[in-house]
Length: 231
Image (cartoon, rainbow, N blue to C red):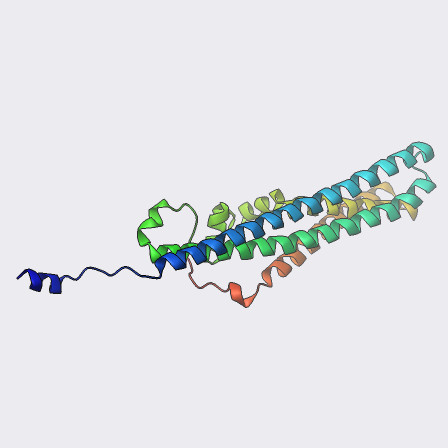
């Protein structure tokens, strides 16, 4: 009878390759962590370079303003200097957008590895605080920004990110350049103020649309394979 019972309730056989699979997944996991670290290092370096260029330009213009008292020479020098700073800002935002796209790729890869861990050991799921799903919702959950899925909250979250903050600074530079050009051609103060406001808003809108389209052009390899369950 004992032999019959053992035949009816066979014990599950352990996977002989499970240990090797875990080692391979762990090595890939650490590789993605290293890639994220390098991405963050370059991101902060780019921001530091831009802020150094911005600070140098503002200090130089302050010295010229003291000597010329915001006269014609100041306007003649300020416009090209601010254009250079504006170019540096746009280039920095472009690179930050690319780095954020790379970081999104690393997060998706880590989520897929976490899914593999759970496939090997389903009982570990209660111990994970990050997501095993490789769609946008899963990536946001891993990054801790689930509340930024859309609406007003997503707009405020965008302004809190490094690209969002730099967009505001670059838009202010665009408005300042437009205001200097308006003063140079002899427009009135109300017209100059209107041009500055329009230039500020236009730069923010254009850069937001451009960044969204650039980030949205993701590789087919990032198509969700383990999507989040619908609530």
